[in-house]
Image 1 (cartoon, rainbow, N blue to C red):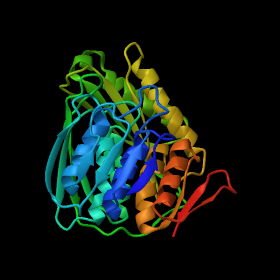
Image 2 (cartoon, rainbow, N blue to C red):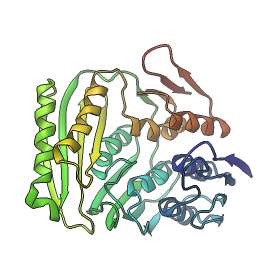
Image 3 (cartoon, one colour):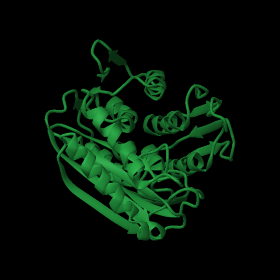
Image 4 (tube, rainbow, N blue to C red):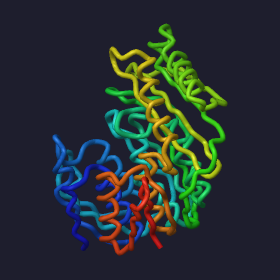
Length: 336
């Protein structure tokens, strides 16, 4: 039984611990879960990820309860099939997907996982960003993965629904150290039906387009969408495509915040990234570490954040040798 102290990290550390346990067939006891958060312990989104992974691995689980701070997880070999889980809140669907996506390297039959919850919510990549950035990066490195949206769900009611499709895969070594020239920029803007009269999606897209063009970043495509949702809301995603990689930057609408300001937040992050040398955005930096450990390679990150440092420490606890070169402006993580 491997003991994991999760007090220094949040939900990402918990989810990664579960995924590594499943991939290495290692029983784990995860304690002090999210102890450094204002509301420690497991929340609905973490329970949904645990439920999905336990089903796929036919795992023996102890401590699967709301606010639980200790979980014991004894996995069996991951299998294919069809799984459905409901977050029951607007908890992030994409973060549940992240707990499962690396299982494509361990399954022998296709796996389909449908999750209900929040598709476009704070503190996680909106589904558009995930589909246009994370999934293509996974696919070009060998993971057979696809994601489809069924319904959009905003905070607080959620009600969104999406499906993750995985097929047996073999990762190739991952190398993202140079991004090359900028090829294009794309803008994806989404609104609930209740905001359509105010043209929120169109205003977000127009603002993003104007500001990017003014900064010399040519926009090749803008996509707007309106959806029936349980809660009003909006989201905007900006995708920068380079010769050798891509990156995503997004913002979620808030009550009382003009659509122009929402788009402006995403643009600010996109332009700051474009002015640097990192090859992946902050979300992907977290998401790629586990596949990097499985396949080996190098990635130039935007920064050595607390998330990244706790993830590296976890990988080392599972026996992976991780080297970090901080000699340049952006750290390079290398795993052989």
